[in-house]
Length: 353
Image (cartoon, rainbow, N blue to C red):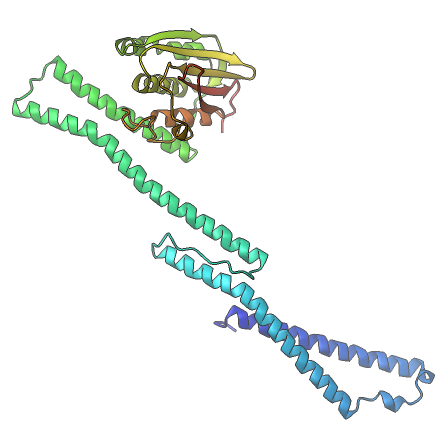
């Protein structure tokens, strides 16, 4: 029956089951009659009355035809409830294979529960596939945008040096190195976020004091924060933890850089502290805070606090990636004074994946 549709197969098999049931019933009936005649001949007055007559065969034939008709009808209805959603599913899968990610299968009002669930799951998968494809396009465009600015500056400066417009002095070299550092940071942030999304962000765990890990950044970030007008307050309480110090230092640097780029110059508090079974690393600024509609997506890649903000839009995504890799969490809340408090919370003992 290769090449025959599912509906016809179901109808044929239902018919065969019905006929088999009739034959078995008739066979069992004859065996019962024979047993009665042999063991209890007095139970019947006229044995010849038990022999099927022409009218009996007619009734049997009519019953068989009626049963077969009902079974074919029931099989066709059952097949329709199964086949129609599957046919829609096949057509939608073919369209998706051809590149139309908007294709969806139709469940139908009378589809069976399992078939309806299959179609629903397929549509959810198609929606996620479409969203991933759209996200990939957006992701690639934003990556190109972030890399284009430092590359363009580097190209312009180097062309100026080649044409004799700029002299190769300490100032020019410093400017070029600054653009190279910007490129390196964007590339590293992209690498961390990509590895985290694919669950391949490996950690090199050590038992360290988080206060010392964050304190190592003081000499690096303090001059930039001071020149930007921030009054930095370092409250680093000892907090021993099993972690990857390089990754946590990267997350702390991203939080501080985020505050430098987006916060209003003023008090900036950088904290580390134990908190029960976890340790917390936080950066608190004095404002202007984050809009409620943007706060929910603040840790997503390329999501900036404001439309005019600077930075690559990857810093907080890196913070969340590092926190997740340590089986912790990163979160934000608005302070009483209207500022932003970004916190990374890490369990004291992190089991390696």
